[in-house]
Amino acid sequence: MSHIVHDLIASGDARIVDLPAPVRHQIETDRNFGLPTALYGATIACYLGFLVIVGSAFANPVLAIPLAIIVLLVAAFFGVPAIWTRLKGNASEPATLGEFERRGIMTNTGRLSAGEASAQVLVLPVLLVVWGLAVAVIAAVVA
Image 1: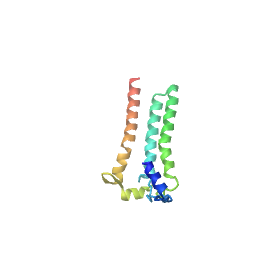
Image 2: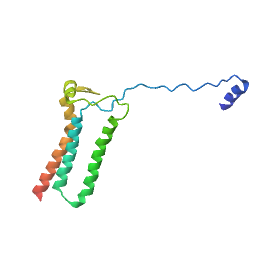
Image 3: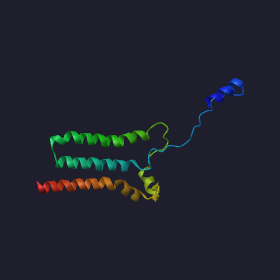
Image 4: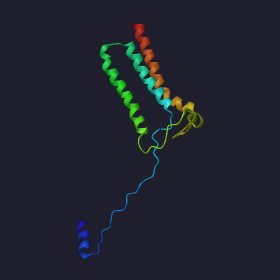
């Protein structure tokens, strides 16, 4: 194939043109996921609450390092997206609780009210706290 190009250049039939300007896609980025900050705070509180419950129920110096690592991971899991939402070029802001209550949130399967969306977001963290309490109570009864 390259010999054809060289033949065209040699015969003078080829022309050299400048590169076209790159196409700039104007897509608005929304890095907030449409949920209010309070839901993220409640999720963090549940995860850290679970760690406090389990850490105090099974207090042992050997658990200090694993629990500290898990706390750092939870901070990273929520801290990195929090930084991501504040990047340059992100014009959107998270919904306030009032806006979230009024509008709800649109998902792939349809619009959810604020209560439905909150239940979906918080069901796992709350169950984790309940599970930690159950394990702590069982450990206290058995001991």
